[in-house]
Amino acid sequence: MMPELPEVETIRRSLCPHLIGQTICQADFARFDILRSRLGSSKVTPAEAARLSTGAVVTGLDRWGKYLLMQLDGTWGWAIHFGMSGTFRLKSTEEIDAHTHVRFLLSSGDWLSFRDPRRFGSWTRIDRADLVEAVNGWVGLDLLAPALDWTRFRALLSKSESPIKSRLLDQRFISGLGNIYVDEALHAAGIAPFRPSRTLTDDEWRALFRAAQRVVRAGIHHRGTTLSDYNDVNGNVGDHSSYLRVYGRAGQRCPKCRTVIEKVKFRGRGTHFCPACQSANGR
DNA sequence: CATGGCCTGGCT
DNA sequence: AGCCAGGCCATG
Image (cartoon, rainbow, N blue to C red; front, side, top):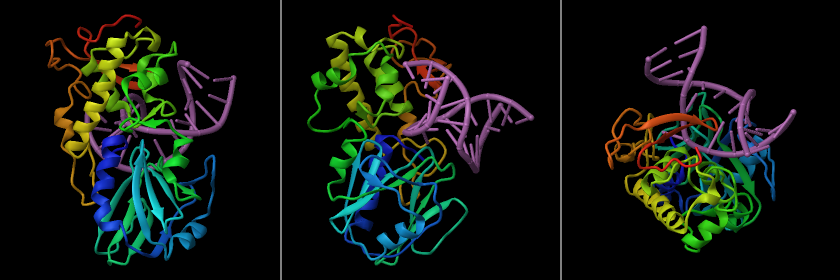
């Protein structure tokens, strides 16, 4: 499965034709722990979640950062987060196992199921039609938001002693990047993950912004990165893993300069980089 | 702001 | 048996 921007966008696109306009004829929520509340939203029980969803029409499917936003009846919706292991599957027959936590029977006759073994994913009820507006209060501007340019990107991220990688992973500033695409973007821009944010030059901010957008767009183009699991709702895997240049490639040679790629533990996350072409000041 | 915790599954 | 994993949240 997958939880960064390109994977959520891949799921959204594959879901749209099957979901938009459908009525949810039956809804089952199996557990309390994936139902969450957040600022501006209310916590619901599985029984309430099922009652609210039953009979609702899916009127929109959007994405903001790593959240999938399912609009219902044009008035409210679910903000769905995939955690580390969340997936949607669409099947013509009912299937249930211990890790399937939500199931919708659609008016088309299809069953939509949400499976999440590790249960880091979440469903949050948003009590208004403008889900994007609501989620915008939880997480920062989406990396692909039209309003974003490199100067705004710089303004959001630069005023900090914290390392650029930590800043890019912090969804409160820019949302959508996770561990894979951050490592890829920093490599593409030639910037060491450990560099304090405030030390980047304007040329580097411009390069980093472009690289970040480029790597997530490439990820979307390849229908996401699949490391060990299924990806879109039809069970197809994404192609992007073969295009990764540093993530998961420790010990291999950098495609730019042939230096051996290193992997270190940094702030609790595996961090892949080229020690030669990602200038290491501040490490 | 850096660490540990939350979970399961897969790999060594 | 132990470590690792695409994410986030609570905590000192």
